[in-house]
Amino acid sequence: MLSLLAASGGSIDPIFWSDLGLSPHLFEIGGFQLRYYSLAYLIGVMFAYWHLSRMLKSPGAPMAQRHADDLFFYCTLGVILGGRLGYAAFYTGGETGIPSAFTDFSGDGFVSWKLLRMWDGGMSFHGGLLGVLAAIGWVSWGGKLSFLRVCDYIAVTYPLGHLLGRLANFNNGELWGRQSDVAWAMVFPGGGEVARHPSQLYQAGLEGLLPLIVLMFMFWKTKARYRPGLLVGVFTIIMGAARFVNEFFRQPDAQLADFAVRTGLSMGQWLTIPLILTGLIVTIYAVTRKPVGTGSAAPAAG
Image (tube, rainbow, N blue to C red; front, side, top):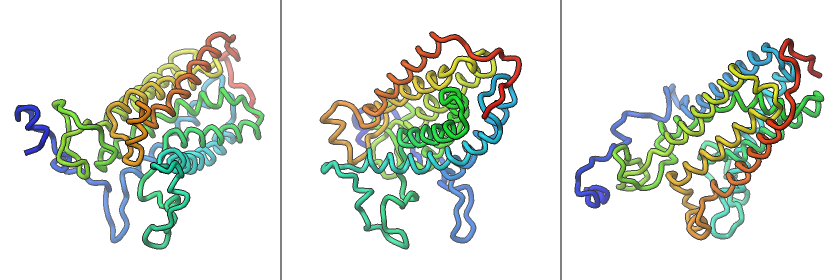
């Protein structure tokens, strides 16, 4: 009998993730598996490119299609490299404080360096965000574009990929939450014989679906696109606040559990605080400045 049931008098039967019939891959042919996590990245990137191209056809676009093509490549690279390097730097320090991903060469198979073994897991949202910002900065500088306005357009396209990524985490039975006795608590493989918050679903809703709905509405139904920084500012506030709240339900990374106890907040929450403050500053800047453009036609970009 699970310890959770003992604590609650056996009145609530937890949900067993293994009973849901989920699999980490869509299909398998020989030794090849099409994993849902990879599929989530692929669909997210394809949607971002398609939707950005559609946005550029609406009045007030700050760039041309050729810039979107460049962004498609560099932002994808920024998400992958930034996400992996961010995870290595922020989440593999352990007790020594030295990121082990940079120094660990004990992996099996052809690739032994832990930093390159992305299939073993480990991507950071904050690192991916920094990678995307670097990519936007590079393309904006090269094309003489408004950095803030390009960020606005990219921000609208991002949440769907994040939503799908968190759903893939749930489908994989990974990144589960803290122990809980709520009616929808689940027992995950590798999480011990205790029921836990399905925090992957919380993140999918608050960090994916919510900003997707809000930003889509703001872009297509309001004049927000003409206020440089407004869309990306709102996006940053929602994502930062949602991540801060969700961290109360998400199980801290094992190597950083002591850090969370010592500081009172998880690493994700500490990294999120400057994110929220930045979002507030950018949003205030956007709403206190005059709108740009007339909305009658898209300006020539670059």
